[in-house]
Amino acid sequence: QRFGEDELPEGIVGEEADAMALLAVFAVHLVLVLKHAVQIQVRAVGVPAIDEIDTEECERFAAIFGGDPDPSIAARFTTRKTTWLFVGRMAPNKRVEDIMQAFAWYHRALNPNSRLILVGSPHSCPRYFAMLRMLTSDLELRDICLEGFAGAGALASYYRLADLFICASHHEGFCLPLVEAMHHGVPVVAHNVGGIPEALDGAGVLYAHLNPPELGALCHLIATDPSMRAE
Image (cartoon, rainbow, N blue to C red; front, side):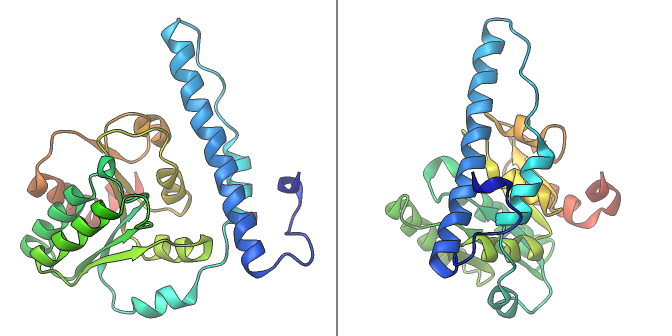
């Protein structure tokens, strides 16, 4: 009922405002996931796909509930570097280690003035998150940043920092961070699995069967080729 209003109700501030913003994002995510599941089912029986979700409404939700950028994030990343960004659950199906290994090759072979920012709560799968920390140490790269959970304002700041968004999931439903990245004008490089092609809807760059150097080289192309970024 609040989605139609132009601003949060009077008196909703602080943690309550953050909770309402997260609830709004969850509601949009739920609609998109259900839409994807329904389309899979109707296509299986030969029924044409249902109409696309109203993207203008999604943009309106983002404008109302997306949150203002958090200046403390920009203050921590003042040095200009080519920035890869991942946002999502830190869980094995996300294959964050593939992103880290591709970035490590890219950082050493092509662009040492670069960073990888990984945003996601460690609580989804603590053992996996611990493994990622160990891998960060093994790679001996200070420019891999495990940031943990981020609220709406912090997410807006991370997207503003990003030169590209990367998703290496090995299985995925409708991946909302891809839509968020596109909303913020960030080019997307994503593994061609599950609901990812539908989420991108013809935008972004899909890949399959790439080793770390190949994925790193692809990301370098997206980060440095203006015509491809614009496309």
